[in-house]
Length: 72
Image 1 (cartoon, rainbow, N blue to C red):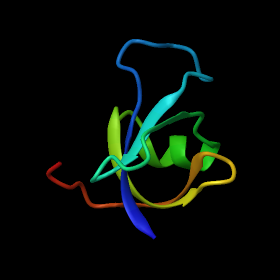
Image 2: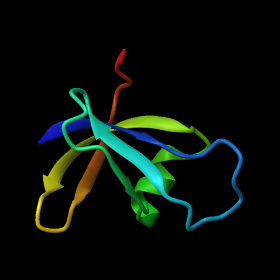
Image 3: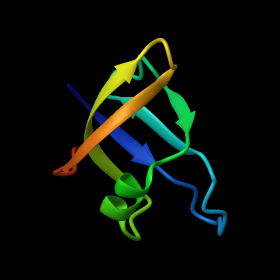
C-alpha cells in the first residue's frame, strides 16, 4: 500500500467529475472517478490522503481508508 493524495475540482456540481489521484513521487498520476466510499470519506474536503494500491492493468488506483493529512 502507498499513500496517495486525492484532489477534486473546486467548482463542480457534477458527481461524476474526475478526481486527480497521485502518490508522493507522482509516479502514477491518474484522473479517475471516485467510488461512493471514497467520496463519503472525503466529505466536503477538496483534498485528502488515502491508503491505495495502483492497479497497472486498469490504469487506476484502488483507494482504501483515509489517513492523516501529509505535507506534500
